[in-house]
Amino acid sequence: MTTHDVTASLTRFEADGFLLCDTPMLPADLIRRASEGMDALRRGEYETGTPPQPSPWKPGDPEDRLCKIEQPQFANLAIRELIGHPVIGEVVAAVTGAEWVQTWWVQLLFKPSLPPGTPAKTRVGWHQDRTYWGCWEPGSELLTAWVALSEAGPDSGPMKFVVGSHHWGLFPEADFFSQEDDHARIAVPTGQSWQEVAAILPPGGFSLHDDQTLHGSGPNTSGISRRSFAIHMRTNRSRPVDDKRQGLTAFIDDPAICPILYKRH
Image (tube, rainbow, N blue to C red; front, top):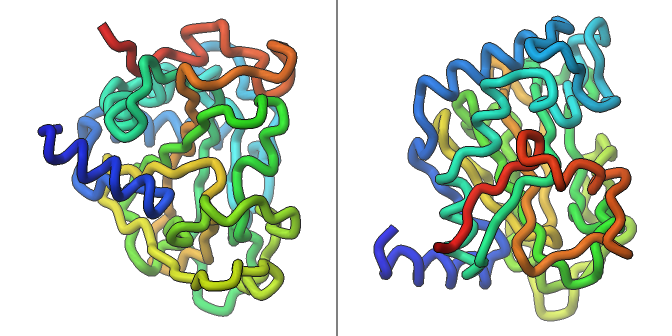
């Protein structure tokens, strides 16, 4: 990034709570190999001999559900390479000024394509990541990169962000698991408006969002399965509650599972 790019990206991220890197940022070969790794995990094939962490979806579950697999890098080396790619850390450092950036948790997300009107549990309800991350001290700098392995077009159920919502505080009523496209339950602050922006991305592109930015996604009717990884990251301005290594922070001292993506020289 040039100095102008960094300044512009920082300004957009601070104002909007998200940033779209809508050109291919990751190598095409790596995207292909990680996609093959995704298929292997869905079949229950674990290259390393170690399965992912216990997950909402497991091999053999219904194909009309959102496939969400926790810590897939345990099981596949190409996925491990992808979630440690330095370009992601460089973008995070550019928009935050961080001294270092680390991956601390990863989710594989495979959203099948189904005909319009087909009942399916593939929606991701409007939510804020911070609601589910009580293992981190208040004020910790936590972000997520949503990496597209397939074309994320308007009909694929792309991630959608609510502009500026990271400045609105926390909404306990927001729910990742909701299958309703209804944000009326979220009380938008006086003087603010609900403005959605979809993350339309090519394979190898990614979005970046703040842990308090409201986001969600709808069903996929594109005819092609939507493939992505959510890479959750932290900067040097973060700390686990009581410095504990348990639950979501259990693996942060293992560089193979939770790699450092960027470190200022």
